[in-house]
Image (cartoon, rainbow, N blue to C red):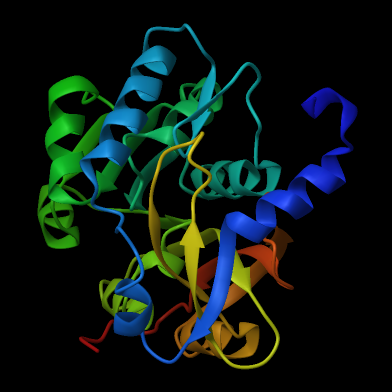
Length: 265
């Protein structure tokens, strides 16, 4: 039956039951209507998919969904390689909220061409435990906190891909990361809407996994202002995602202003 129904109609019908809904006055109000992101069901689904990527059965995974072809984010990859070129082939990435290494494996073919590449993921404890047990290797490491990662090594770029919108206080995290004096901050797959910041509830289609969680849609101007006091924007790009509410998903590459002292925020 699905093959007989136009994809636009399927997306519209799905958006009635799943996707992003509501405009809540607080994070707590939205959270009361959600199952949460820390569900063990999510971890197990992501783990099983990533193991199939790791052993070569599938080339790519995103949000636990397996793909038969890699869907590259060309601007993200170009940003990473540009930073590496400026650092004479060195690229140390702090992937904040990087799951079990989705973006690392997505771009591994290109990353392996660099003479010094390290990918460090900071995640929730149960993801870190699983990452250390099943996925950690010479170039891919997992940490429980930003501080633990920075105590281990220096970082060239922080990657924030599809993560800020799922944090209760995203601007606190942004301030914290800026205070570390890291040269580049790379944003991807982040949703924006016109008007004020909006708090929604995202209901995941159960064929992916059964879950729901609060999700921000940011005001673009306010979001950018959080960076431009200390960083300059190198470029802005369109991200892959789409939502069932009026919005756009964007990415940004920010470079720390030369000579700007780090601060504690």
